[in-house]
Length: 103
Image 1 (cartoon, rainbow, N blue to C red):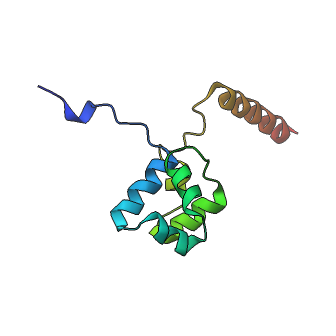
Image 2 (cartoon, rainbow, N blue to C red):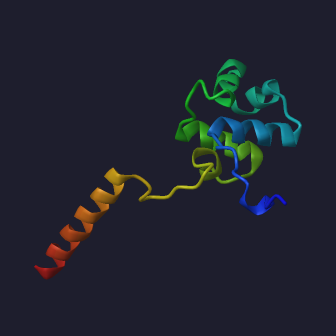
């Protein structure tokens, strides 16, 4: 029997999130262009992961859908220490804070 709770989930991208919300709301690319002044071609490129979605665009699109921009920018969550280089930075920062506290 298949354990549906342990099935792997497809990797979400900002573009997939934008497309999902747009379609869920019944909007066309032309509708989104009218609301945000972002060209249909750029919106399509974002939805197809051919163009990055920056903070400004994520905020504008989030306003259309009434969501937090973080849902667009970080569709898989934002695990701060998920990469070795980030863990290294964090470890150095902890040590630096300890030195500053010690005086």
